[in-house]
Length: 219
Ligand code: DC
Image (cartoon, rainbow, N blue to C red):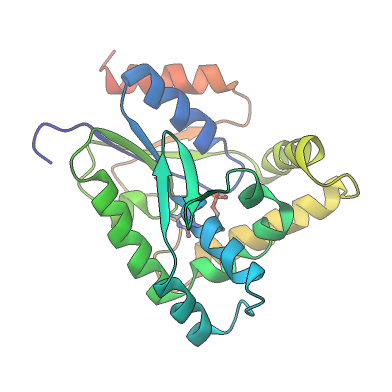
């Protein structure tokens, strides 16, 4: 790890990881890498190519000719900016199926390690502390109750994309996603013994950011 500052952030969908990690990156002036966005971008391409999410052979072939990159905190899929498209509910509901494919994960992990190689970084996802950056200087597991996470996702979806969806639907979808993400065979979501657990259910984003910064600064 040399003298680099490397921060791993994991946690379930809707816990506030990305918002918190982005703010911390700004405060500490370090790079932010959203690994969920990478799985989302690949899912977008698979759906656009009309490939079935269980057609592993075709998915792996497609992945060979896919480029995913970040520039100034925007994500690009084959050189096209896709920040908005990857947040749609159709992606939410298919991405877990793609993220459980072994070969997809291997490729993503390799890319993620490369992206973090020479910088001070904060990276968020599901397997950052366990697989991608096991030697991170700090590991945080950010979580919240499933109801609170569903409320946040529901609000976000109403603001962005889908007006017909109900809170109950979002709650069910999050429960399904939690189950797939935490019971899959490869790199399931779990808390490591050396992680700080931050439960954001009754905290504001700024309170969480303050708490994490104070841990990093040893206050
Ligand atoms: O954090 P998110 O909701 O954008 O993640 C999208 C999906 O990708 C989620 O279902 C879990 C998966 N994911 C993963 O398996 N490993 C990661 N490092 C990041 C995300």
